[in-house]
Image (cartoon, rainbow over all chains, first blue to last red; front, side):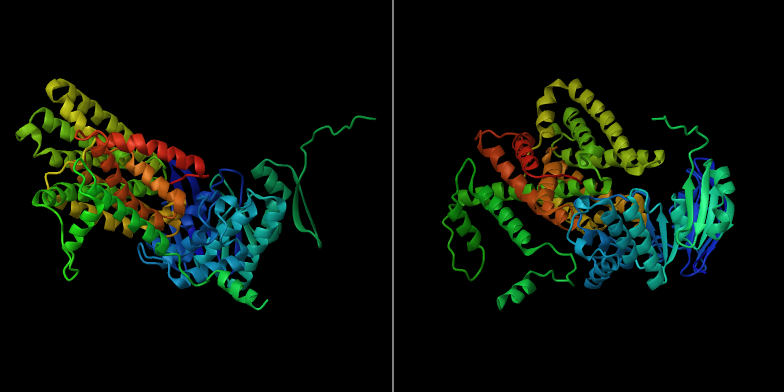
Length: 265
Length: 359
């Protein structure tokens, strides 16, 4: 088991943001966290990455996150934050090389093999042509590829994605998710992601956990979690869940009971 | 076209080169700049020693070259007892202020940060003002001035740091706010002390504006170990400063002990700056313009910005001091006035001719 968490709770400023959540992600699996804004998805990811204090237990390959050192966690877990900080004048290659930091000594300089690792990470994400570009000149999709490449260069077995597609157009969203799926397929990478787009969550994750108010409300294969009833209850949204051979599972928002009279011409 | 493949091969990026050292052309540029500034500083002044004669004099100290010095004992004394220590101090102070500024900007991700912002200037100013105004240790506090300034600068930043840490919250912003608060308070006390002792106002003021007058090599030898140690620590952390550019959170998730790195860098930069201002007074602006000018030339990676700020800062301050002691000779301008008066338009020009600026 790559990741096993039990009874995880996190309090921020006295508010219990994550409340007794448990989860298990096997090697090569993709677990999706869904839930409304403020459900605790990001905080749970931060706890797994050792970035916030938690109670309960989070085991990475059997070792407690809180008792592993910063660097040891960084070698096991790579994080793609929802809004990465982008130093605009840094070149893509320099940026991706930063992913090698946990493999260098304190203040150590990157070695030639770290540059090789960074270049190959970029190549795996179809970003080899971006190496010398400055981050500030990239499109949203290219930028996200650079951020993913940095995470891949980190050479961790668990990839945490926090809304990896939130700022992208639909084409770039698909590309990024396909790239993650490919990484998982050829590298045995395990993925834990928070996702806003429920259709994408259903299409890409093996299993989903629905969080609301910091607690697990439902979990299981997408078809069991993405139900019209659960979505109405926890997101306050009226949707239709459609499923067929061609589309797989899709969550289609409905306009809530508005008179849809069109003016007669 | 037989050569096309060859050319393409030459132009192709060399894949296995790690981005580590400073490119040779920048090493050479920096060396030439520092050397030129030093030679000009040695040769020019109220007494013109002549560039060639200074060169001969310097070379005559190397064995086996067979170069004879043409200097009289007076000229020799001017060169080695007056100018050389002053220029050595200028090199050290300039290198320190510029590299400390660059390091502060990196660690706070703030283009306007330098040790002065966090209370180093206000603390040093208060320390020096107290010993001057109350004549501590005799002779207008001249002997104790460096110690008082050093202690003041260190305490100023130390208090700001502890205050910022105790507040918590977003660390970089909180620390800067704490620094500004402490600086305002210390400046208020300093102004009060200064005003309450009217006869020493002039002296306090000229200390605050900065000067590189030394009492010989002793001052240089006192500053040297601080600047050396501080520079080593800062240069050692230059790659980590690049990692901090992605923010505390992401740097943490890359395995960097952010708080410890910040503390070490701030401590090193502050101690070095405190030692420098103890002898030079509060020379303004060097910690801001030199690192930014370097960034505009070579990009934002601290791999290059830190070592080059160190070198260009050293040469820059020596040139500014040259202006300070020649334009109204035999009188001298405070060097802080010169750095701001010439540095500001230069920096405005650099800003206008390039596209971006950032920490």
